Length: 271
Ligand code: SAM
Image (cartoon, rainbow, N blue to C red; front, side, top):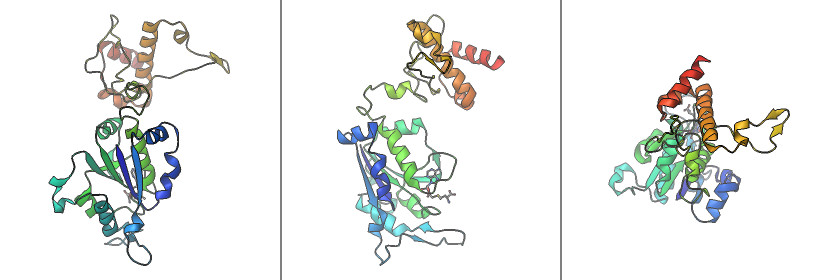
């Protein structure tokens, strides 16, 4: 998969992808990431990429011409020129606090594509006509305002990349985690607990422990030490439900839950 980033700070990305799984994916050629300097497409003496907002107000806005030229140089055509020539495997994304919120489900959708072009805004944002003419999606990474789209783009690249087949060692591990998709059908054991944690079903992950078994007077939950896999599975499911209820109760509305899950949640609510 190919990621193209349009930014006024290409150097921002030099270190950020030089670690861990992302670095390995880049080395192995599973993905490519290229940062394009927007100023290369500004032709005045000062390589100006911003201007004052029409209508007045604070700050500056990224001008449309250099952005359009940068996108055209990447082979992206504007809707005006006919969106039908757009490659179906490509999405042009504007990072923006005004966008739809980036979730694991969006990351899964993007990971199925061949190429993402990510536009990093700065100042007060990007001239809206770039959004109208070139962008397929406007993505926000959360309900707060960053000083630039670079961090947001790095988040989208990282979360998307690790879902591309071959990037994580174990193909299933992307689904074992928080927000993992549901299994096609919830297969439950005799006690009504889902048989696998393969599909987190939109729940948060369960807590993890490693050695030593005792740390600062706190022991690892006994169930994790006894080797009874059915009990461990049941405990982990309960913990997933508990964490989700505690920290992100709204996720339960859309989660894939068994009848036993619902019973456990009701019991937790009564506690
Ligand atoms: N005036 C804009 C607003 O209130 O929506 C904020 C502009 S912000 C200071 C500058 C740039 O940072 C934006 O153009 C966008 O690219 C990026 N940005 C800020 N917050 C973001 C978020 N939550 N998600 C994605 N990008 C964000």
